[in-house]
Image 1 (cartoon, rainbow, N blue to C red):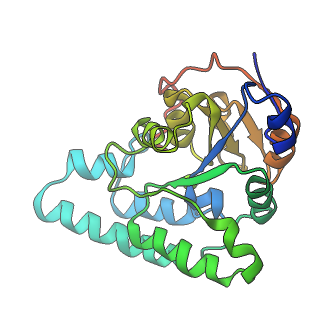
Image 2 (image 1 turned 90 degrees about the horizontal axis):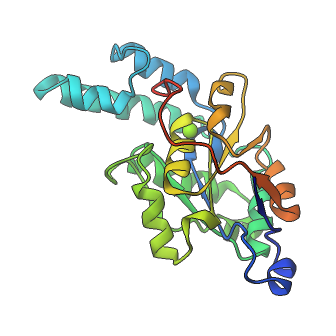
Image 3 (image 1 turned 90 degrees about the vertical axis):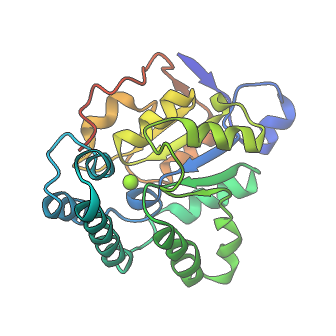
Length: 239
Ligand SMILES: [Mg+2]
């Protein structure tokens, strides 16, 4: 077990060298926003993606020419429909306030398309009270055009390098096994936002919460993490 010291400014001032979380990277769909599992199921069904295979991998590996172009088009249409239902994850503002107050950086890595990410940043966030908007200053914003995408660790390592913060001091928060694997493979802490239908990913999570603002307490007090969790894909996460 590895102990992560509290991520508060006070704790950092007292013991600057302690291992602590200094940056948090979020998945978007189902993490910053409420789950879109119905839309993902619809995508899988319409594109006939076999269970155990990732949607984007299936399109790239098993389709070509017109079929691939159609699948990408259909994917964007379904993502557009999901965009209309985007709501902030309950408790998110409280967590972001804590991160902001303690100068902990934030970023987004999503496998969704750029327009959906922009919709989140420009439309969903702009519906928040003016006083909250500064909390949503995620940087960088990484969409699926970044290759290789999750569960590969490159996007996480890119953020680590850009921020000048070592991977072990970053946390990846998500609702899917691929988010957790991305974090684990980068050498970061992985946190699962648990719902009824994603419990099978728990073995790849250092931290598990049922509401996103439960992370506030863990970060404020410090927590233990079993850094022996491996990044091998044994869960059948292409789910
Ligand atoms: Mg997600």
